[in-house]
Image (cartoon, rainbow, N blue to C red; front, top):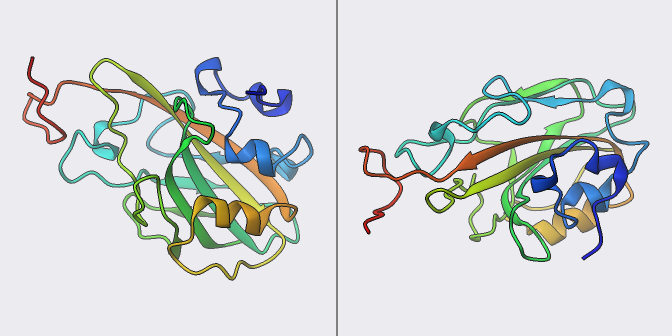
Length: 196
């Protein structure tokens, strides 16, 4: 498998440098953080562990909140793709596909239903709760893309459909990553029965 391009590899730890990440296919050195376009979360800083309330370890878990600065001029729509960069497959497991966000400064609140969502790795149009095996750390890469055209994709589209629809139309992009380590669920949290 080829390496992740240098322009994006510099923003991610080695454990999160999956060459199949959407940003490697859709962005480039010029579009990364173009015009100060940045993705962040009030719930975690880059490299900070995800709270269990965003994972399968808690029963009422939801998607984490995300915020972004103004995208480059001419941006029509924003797209968010979240992938598990620790996945050994050629394409990393997709945890969230979101589009239909206005091309402007904005945010998604914790658990907010986005305007449009596509199919995650399990075939559902929702936030796929991280659920790594006990003791295993996975790295989740949150990717945002600004496009210079409005998307006509219907809800439930696949990762491949979404990437094909915006390839060549990305005006800006950024990434944010967060690890999560699987824990034993015998502390009363929901998420599995790990008995030895």
